Amino acid sequence: MVWLQGCDLRCPGCWNPSTHGFDRSGEKSVDEVGEWILSCQAVEGVTFSGGEPFQQAAVLRLLCEYLKLRRPSLSIGVFSGYTVSELSQGQWRWKSLQSDSWVKGDFALFAQVRQFLDFGVFGRFRQAMACKDKPLCGSRNQEVVFLSDRYSPRDLQPQSYEVNIGGDGLVTITGFPPGDLWLEPKTGITPNHVTPHSAPSSRL
Image (tube, rainbow, N blue to C red; front, side, top):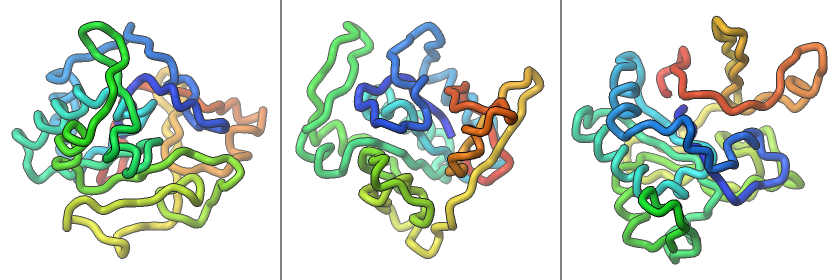
C-alpha cells in the first residue's frame, strides 16, 4: 500500500485523518517512489490509497506509467473516495504541482489513469453504512470495480488486516481492523498516517 498525502473529502470516521492535509514537507519525486516500489521484488502489485489518490491525478498517472514501463506484470489498484460516475463526469478536482491550486478533473485524465489500473474501490466512506462483510469495502455504498481481466470477484478475500511494528515502535495497521483494536487505550494504537512500507503479502 502506498498512501498519497492530501484529501479534502474528509469522510467522517476516516481511518487515515492525518493524510487529509496537503503537507508537502515529505514530498518525493515520481522516480523516487517508483524505484522504491520496483525494489520490492516479491510483490504482485501495488495499491494506491490516501489521502485521495485522484487529488494528485497528474502525478498518479505519471507514477503508474513509470511502473508499467519498467515492470509490465505489476498489478495496480486504487482506493478512491470518488465514485466512477464522478470521475467519468468531471465531478472531481486535483491539485496542480506547479501552482498548488485546484484544477477541475475531467474524463480524459481519469481515463489516462484508468488504463493502468487492474481494479479500484470507489466511493466515500459512510460511517452509518460501515460494514465488515464486503471485501475491500469499508461501507456498503462503496464498490469494487475490475478494470482489467486480471482479477474477478472470485479473487476477493474476506476482510482482514495486518499490524506491523517498526524498529522505532511505529505501529502500522493496514486493511480492515475491528474498531476496538485502536480504541482500546492499553494497546497504544491509534490511526496514523505512515510512510509507504512493504507488507508480508503479495501486494504493496
